Amino acid sequence: MSETAPSPHVRSAPATLAVLAALAVAIGAVESLPLPALPLIQRELELTPAQAGLLSTTLLLAGSVTVPITAKFADAFGGRRVLLALVWCIVAGGAVSAFAGSLPVMLTGQFLQGLGAGIIPVAFVVLRELFPQRMSASVGMVMGCFTVGSGAGVLIAGPLADTLSRRWMFLLPTLLVTALAVIAYFMLPHGTTPRKRPAARTDWLGGLLLAATLGTLMFNLSKIPENGWLSATTWGLLTLTVVFGTAWVLVERRAEDPVVNLRMLGRRGVWSSSAVAGVLGAGYAVPYFLIPQLLALPAEATGFGFGASASDISLYLFPAVVVAVVVGPAAGALVRRVGPRAVVVGGLIVTASGLLFALRWHSSPWHIVLVLLLTVGVGVGAASTALYIGVIESVEAADTGVATAIGGVARGVGAAIGVQIAAAIITTSASPTTHLPTEGGFESGFLLSTALVLLPLVIVRFLPGRASQTASPARDEGATGAALR
Image 1 (cartoon, rainbow, N blue to C red):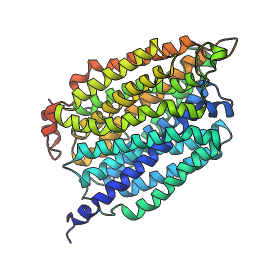
Image 2: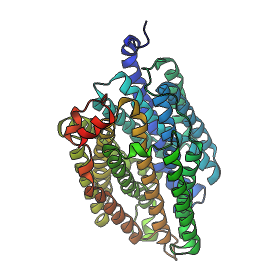
Image 3: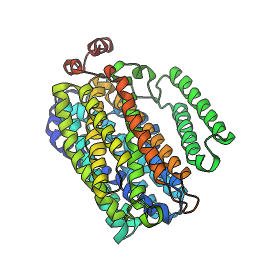
């Protein structure tokens, strides 16, 4: 059989899609577990909201730093080995998080689980090899399955934490991922299509500088409630962040195989989609962090809030995730008709509408459910799928993993910054009497996220439109750029 014979891939395509879908469900569940239980974890470990925010940002930033590297390996070697390695990182992270008794240990577990963020762009590499003519539908399906898993994780996290313990909340889904990892080892095809580029060299210096930049920024934001927004320590750490960031850019511009290919970032469809993904990530992460905090607050002590348990929070969050399950594949189909740009604009507007509603109305259960339906369910679900498809159709097949990873980095960094800023806002707004966040702090967070979500509307004209739908993935870079213009 020749090296390019397609028959093994054709025969394994349905099984591969089934395995990837199952992994997306399981990993979505594991990554969403801490959200409903975050107030409970916060109480057990005696954390402030700003410290609790570090749990979310650590998971997000771990993926942001390592996703470009893992995606590059997938583009160079194929997706199978890279995907399996990431799955086992998630298993290790789940086990560490289950037995964590302090913030540093919990952060270690969340870091390991955050490495699993790279599975999505790696899965896109596999999908493009097996389903080159059905990329929109395949991407929509995987994103939809990931959302299904997120919904399952949200739904079971609270009841598991309340009825069993936080330990079993992490352990049970981790056991499921372990079983799927074994199945994936035997089911995923070993062969890949021939690579168009040599094996990637790891840019460790670029990775370390990126980690230092983001880590310093997140640490600074977590300490603002103690140090103050205008303190010398805050500004000193901000200066150090700028120094690390500048050094990272200089290294990446000269690196032979950089962590983030800044030249690829210069492509119109890639940079615009990444910019929107970053701001959208920050915009939706704010309410996604604030709403569980608001639900858990005791109304008798603060005058607002719901005094919700982890199980109650799961039920509040679940309807939005169910809606997102439908929206993901539907957005993929809609992109084929109207193009990514129109779907992104619609998603941004719907998300902003939900956030404006939350700014004024957040005192009844139906208020919270509606806000989550509009933001996480419809707006973010549609915009995220369209952004991924727009990036994939803007680059050649060999660049799929790296290009989608750039968008993943932007979204992860944006979400991490959004969470930490929101945590700092409600921590600094705490009442001196009750030491609990005030309603004004939550309203400031909702207002900030509304502004962030609307900000990308000024650059949406640079997103891929309907013209990109006819562009051939095999075209060279110049032809692709011309098609996008």
